[in-house]
Amino acid sequence: MLLLPTLITFALGISPLKTSTASPSQSVQKWDPNVCAVVVCGPAQNGLPGRDGRDGKEGPKGEKGSQGLQGLKGSQGPPGKMGPGGLVGGKGSPGEKGTKGDIGDRGLQGVPGLKGNPGNAGLSGPKGDKGSPGEKGVKGERGLPGTTGSQGQPGIAGSPGPKGDKGSVGEKGAKGDKGDRGLQGSSGLQGLKGQIGSLGLKGDKGSVGEKGTKGDSGLSEINLLKRQVSTLEGQLRALQSSFSKYKQVIMFPNGRIVGEKIFMTSGYDGNFDSLKQRCSQAGGQLASPRNAAENAAIQQIIVLYNKSVFLGINDIQTEGHFKYLNGENIGYSNWHTGEPNNQSDAEDCVEVHSSGKWNDRSCGEKRLIVCEF
Ligand SMILES: *[C@@H]1O[C@H](CO)[C@@H](O)[C@H](O)[C@H]1NC(C)=O
Ligand SMILES: *[C@@H]1O[C@H](CO)[C@@H](O)[C@H](O)[C@H]1NC(C)=O
Image 1: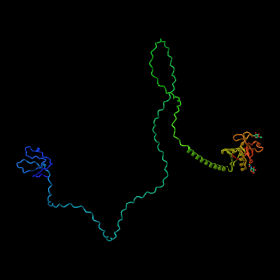
Image 2: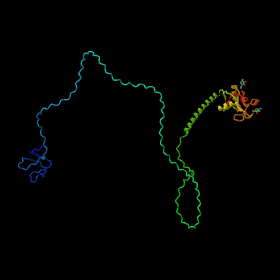
Image 3: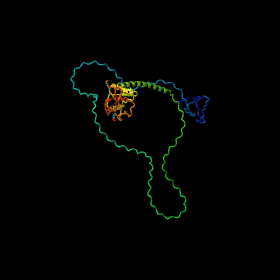
């Protein structure tokens, strides 16, 4: 707002006027900050020119003016946007039925249908012939060379060369003075490596190691063993009883047990050699009683079959000296009275009758087999 030209009010606190802008001769009232003053300025009449209003302060706001005249009517605006579509109208009433039309022309052929699913797989065909063998592969690359071997042993010294011709004896010269000592020769080539020395003496005994940690108490293991032994004892008893039963079954009716020995017949009849061979093939030998009990067991089998047997005893080697099959002289016999009698010079084998008595008999006769195991 412009300063009113007629009145300028200075108030306290306004920045002081600068007197440097006017000359000292001009009668301008000096502004004293401690005095409130009113200056009335009239029209400039040959007076001193007034100061410009640069330092004026904005005046108070004026009163609101009266309402202006109504403006002119504006020009017509552009057309508005298209409104939303109206609601669908109700269905009209059906028209009357028309007359039937003429038959139309044949329609165009339809498009072919979609391809059907594939059929089930057929049976597998016969196995094809074996193909011809493939071509032989190319030869592999040569392997890496091996490591260098250890140095070989030095060769044997060569034979001495031929002796040179003897030179002609020169004339004996006068003995010369003793020469100075010669220079030391260069050192010789290093000799061959020596053989490995003999084994050194046994070292001293090492110090005793640290004491080990305490072991578990053996008690639990002993108890475990006791249980296992008692289990084994039970199983052994069961096995023994079962074994004794099977033994009885096997001995019925063709076998007899005497101590550790078992006598058994298969019912076969044959001459001495064939009986001897059969028992041997079975892992035993022809029955050779060593005492009365064993002879009695053989007798029981004879009675059972009502057939005499041949024993594994004969005097084929020396007449009158009956021996077992192992060549040992017999230690027990049960000859019938008057036997052996070497009748008709051909009785080297021994048969036993149902009485248990022995008789010498020709080895070619056929008797019942009884083997001992
Ligand atoms: C067979 O039985 C008969 C009649 O008991 C008897 O006479 C004969 O000695 C018996 N033979 C043998 C080898 O045991
Ligand atoms: C018995 O047979 C042998 C041959 O085996 C013969 O040397 C002997 O003379 C026969 N007679 C008697 C009685 O030993």
